[in-house]
Length: 477
Image (tube, rainbow, N blue to C red; front, side, top):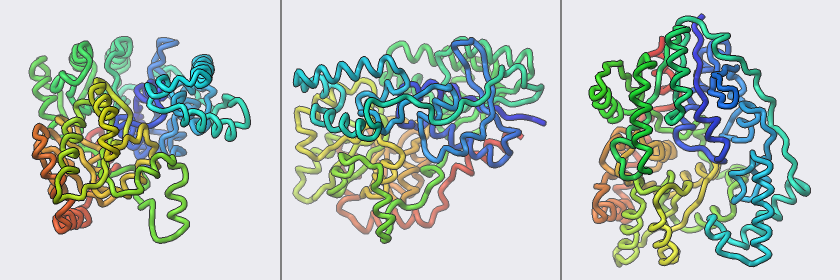
C-alpha cells in the first residue's frame, strides 16, 4: 500500500518562535488534514527533519484532525514533546519565548525591571506600552493562578526513523519552506536514491529571485541554491498559481531541468469554518467576540478597510498609507479607517517612523499585530472591503479569504493576484499611489459598484481547500 508522507519540518521550525499562523503553514495544515480525511490515517503520515538526532522522522498524522484552529502549543507538544505554556497565559511581548523556559523567565524579569524604571521606550520598541504590559501581566496571573506552570497540551506522537517504515514507491510531499536546511537536502537525496521514495515539492513563489530588493541580501542566494539542489531529488513540482508555474519553468530552464510542474491553485477560503461569525442571534454575536482582544474590538467600532498579511515592503504598505492620506483630505470622501492585520516584517522602520510621527495618520490607521484565526475571522466579517496592493505575490491568500466572507477588495493587477480575484474585485496599479487611491475611492463612494462586485462573489463557486487537496492527490495517484 502506497503511503503519503507530508513533511512538517517548516511547521516545527515555525512554532518554536511564533504564536499565530502564516500563509505557508495554513496551506500545509489545511491540505494534510483533508488528505487524512480522504485517504485515511493508515495511508497519510507526517514526517520531519530532527536536527538534534540528525535524522528524518515519521509519525502518525491523525492527531491533526483535532486541530480546529492553529494552536502552536498543541503542535509543539505533539511534534516535539515540549512542555509549553498556553498562549493565553502569556503577555504578548513574551509569547515568542513561551516554549523556552529559561528565556521566558529572563525576559519576564527584564520586563518587570523596565516597568519599575518606568522605561516606556522599552515596551514601545516591542510593539506595546507600559500600561498594556501591566494589564496583560495581571490577566496572565489570573488565568494561570500565579506564576505560570509549563505543561504539555497533548502527548508527543511516537516517532520512528523514516527509513524504517518507508517503502519503494511511497511519496513524500513537501508543502512548506525548507530552504536553508542543507542537511535535510542531502538526506532527501538519499531517500530518493537508496529507498526509492518519490518526492514532490510545492513552490509557493519565487519572490527571493523575482523581488530580491525586498529581502535580506544573502537570502536570495540561499533560496537559489536550495531550489537548484531540489532538482536532484524532486520527482515533480507543484506550483500554487499559473504565475508561479511560469516563474518556476523559467528557473528550471536556466538550471537545465525539465522536471514536470503541475499547477494546483490555492483556495479562496479561510479554512474549515466558513460560517459567518456574526448573525442576528444574540448568542452568535457574543461567541464571535469571545477571545478577540479588546484592542482589536476598539479598532472596529468605526467602519474600516482590512489589509491582511505580514507588514513588509513587498506588501506596498507605504503607498497604500499615502493613498489613505489623500483620501482623508478629499472633501468628496468620508473614508473608513484602515486596519493592517499581521506581524511586523523586514525593512519597515521608515514606515513605522512615519506612522509614529503622524500619530498613525491622525488615528486613521491601526495595526492589529499577530491576530489569531478567530480575530481574523472577526475582522474579515466586519470590514467594508479588503485591500491587497502587493507588488508581487505567489498566490494571495488574503484576497481569497476576503471573498469567502463575501467581501470584495482593492487588488493590485499583477503576478497571481488576478487569478485569485477574478472579476470580483477592483484592480489598481500597485506602483501608482493615485491608482490605489482611485480604486479605494470607487469602492468607498460608489455603493452600486461595491454591491455589483459582492453579487458576483455570491454567484461564484469559490475554490475550497477540498478542491486543492483533491487536485493534488489526483496528480499524485
